[in-house]
Length: 127
Image 1 (cartoon, rainbow, N blue to C red):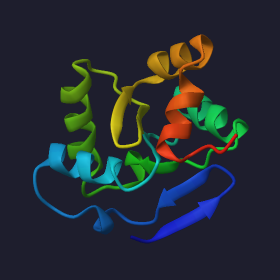
Image 2: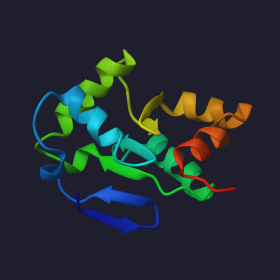
Image 3: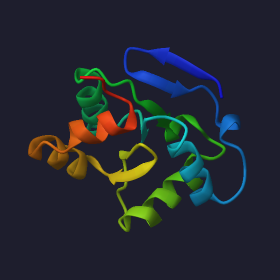
Image 4: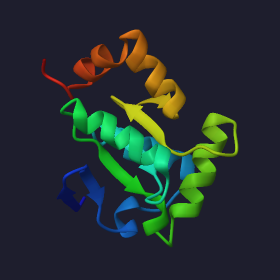
């Protein structure tokens, strides 16, 4: 895959990297490629907040900005909605290839102290 690095982690450079097939399989494949994967939309304030949380902890998540992918972004977003069972799925976070959920789940894990062990187990954090 080709990535573009910046201050927020790693962003997918092109939708062509995502491949074809079933959108749920595509999500699972993308989620397993990095220790922390966030599916987001560039204009979403909650997506920005979760990115900021991870970067503040020293974690460089792989970011999939669905609004930048005009070919597959909508299919991926619908697949994420099916996974979460709601209509506003973004951001969606995977750690170690496992679905964590939206920002509510990530923040709850951070507050109750279970986020750091998840990040360590996934190899995203070395404290």
